[in-house]
Image (cartoon, rainbow, N blue to C red; front, side, top):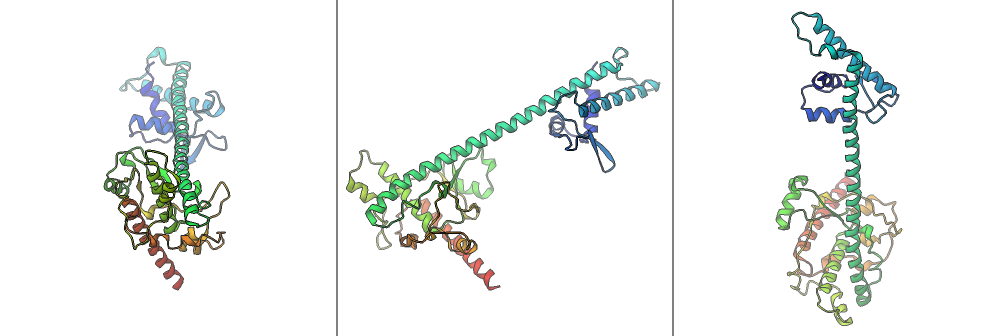
Length: 352
C-alpha cells in the first residue's frame, strides 16, 4: 500500500496543523505536539477537536491507540466514498483496502513521527549540554582573569599599603565573557562595536554588571594590564620589577605611553546592555561600598555592603591618560557617561 500521501494529511488535520506548510515544517510541528496533562486524547479548541498523541510514549498506549484508530477510520471512510462515486478514482488498491493493512500503515507512520520527535528531544539535550559546556568555558575564562587580577592586586596592596585590594577580587564579581556562533547572532549595535574593534571573527565579548562602580571597573582593568605587562617579561621579574609593575597608576600630572603596544582580544558590549544581576558570591564575599555604583546602592538600600577601601573612591578620575589600554579608556569614558545619565534619571525620579 502506497500510504504516505494518503495518511499524512490526516495526522496534520487531527493535530490542527496548517496543510499548506512545507513538509519539513509539518514534521517539526507534529513532533512538537505534546500529550494533554489530563490524559485525554484530544481537546476542543474553538469548536474543533484537536488531538494530542504521545509520540514519546508506547504506540499501544490508550491515547495513541485511539488516535491511530481515528485515522484508520478516516482513511477507510474516505476510500469508501471514492469507491461509491463512479466518477471518482479510488486511492487504495483492492488488496490493500483492509482495516488490518491500513492500521499497520498508520502505525508505521506513527513510529516515524515518534523517531523524529525523539530526535528533537535529543537535539534539545545536546543544545542544553552545549549550553552547560559554554557556561563552564565562560567560568574558566572568568577564573583566569580573576586569578591574574588577584596576583596583581596582591603586589599592589603590598606596594601601596591600600588594604582590601585582594579582598575585592572575586570570580563572581568579574565581567561575563561570552561567545557567539555567528555575526547573525549579534544585534546591529554589537556588530558595529565588533567591527570598530577590528578583531577576528567569533572573538569573545564582555558583558558588565550594572552594580559595579566605574572606579571598581577601572581598577580591574588596570590590574589586568599590570599582569599583562608582567607576563610579557622574558624572564621572571625580580621583586623590584614586580613592585614597579604594581605601583599605583600615575595621576593626571603624568602621562604614560607604554600601554599602546597592548591590544584587546575581546570587545565590550555597550553599557546599556550590562546585566542587572545582583552581586552574589559563591564564597559568600560581600562587596565594599566603594565597589558599588551610587544608583545601585540607592536602589538596593536593604542590601549589605562593607565599609572600607575608601582609597578606591575616585580611582578612575585620578588615573592619567594613557594609564590603560586605549580600548579600556574609551569604554570607561562611555561607562562613566552611562552612570552619570543613570544618576540624573534617578535624581529626576526622586524630585518628581
